[in-house]
Image (cartoon, rainbow, N blue to C red; front, side, top):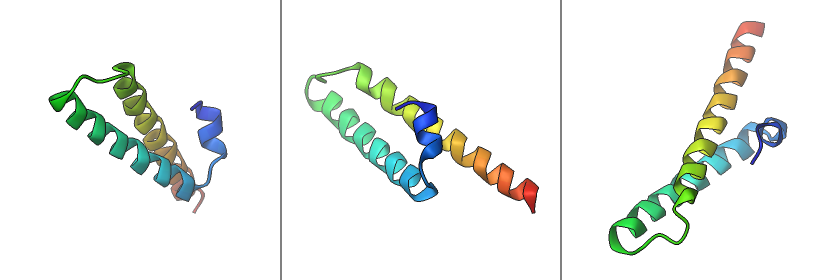
Length: 68
């Protein structure tokens, strides 16, 4: 998901996407311990998605804090 798409989302949608990506990372971590992972690059994509979401959330928090 591109950063521009993430910036258009509401805070609730961003949080849901972050939770979903974290759950996917957890499942993939378990799968990698027991079986072979189907798509190994998916771990990197989810990790980067979580980082993008957290960056946007912190930008919004900083912007709202600064405007008060």
